[in-house]
Length: 180
Image (tube, rainbow, N blue to C red; front, top):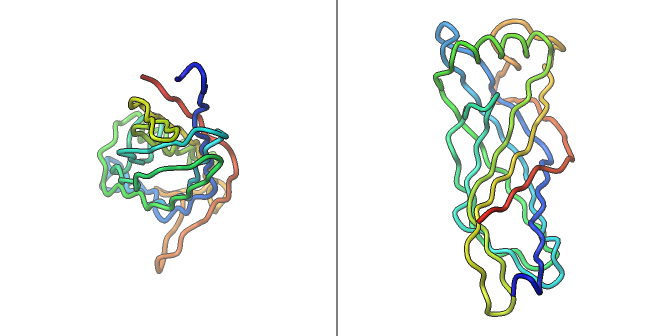
């Protein structure tokens, strides 16, 4: 069935991110991050549906997870359909390595921080009543966050007051990998 249908993997698009906090705290040993992202997924197939199960999303910085994983709703994505999620990602006083502390300082001084939004889970393809086996889904969406001050000093990317954040508009595809 697989060879006949040749299903394509779903596409993901990071549309925007609102950054509420990205700050080193407690003698620069902990990183606090609060971020809301808008992410969409599209099924590019004309005859094959996509079934998502156990989806999770988190943010990482230089290959270190900096927020807790947030569960995304599972569901079915019909042919050529699009679905959208806007989860909050929280990481309160996450311990970071000394190398990461130095990297945060350098990136803040340069005025840009690259945070990777990662989605993981399981995916199956569906045609009529036929449902494929489960496959691993790994998605990586880089988000280029510029400092509001254009080089920002201090320990944070944005100064947050009264719940306001800085919204970054994107519109670029994400790297999607599907494996057995």
